[in-house]
Image 1 (cartoon, rainbow, N blue to C red):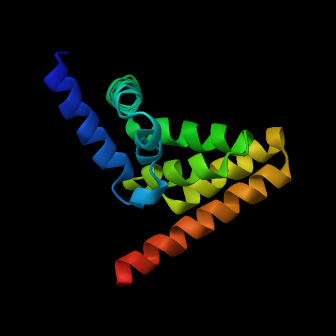
Image 2 (image 1 turned 60 degrees about the vertical axis):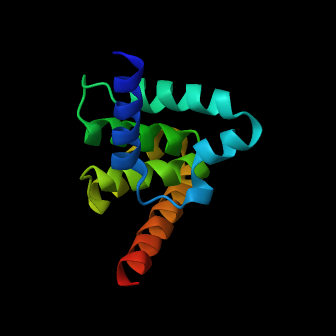
Length: 131
């Protein structure tokens, strides 16, 4: 893929996944604060090359991300990927179910944190839709 195609693919996937994420919550904006060139490199690689792969469908990719981030108890990143999961068609019930499923392996404290993040994202999205 040439550099322009990679840039376009990165933009498309970033918009698909993260269009509902507040700009202040986007890791790319945090990265840019410290190193604009590295932020661009990371974005092109993560979003344009990893998330854009077509080996598995976007909903499957996001359910996997939700499961991993729940198990690792990473609520900030989980918030981004719950948005992304909803944006690519995963349902609230599917996201909650994967959180309950991984609770067997990561424990209820991590699952409870994840469920709170899911609840917060749903409330945030509901508020932005009614505005």
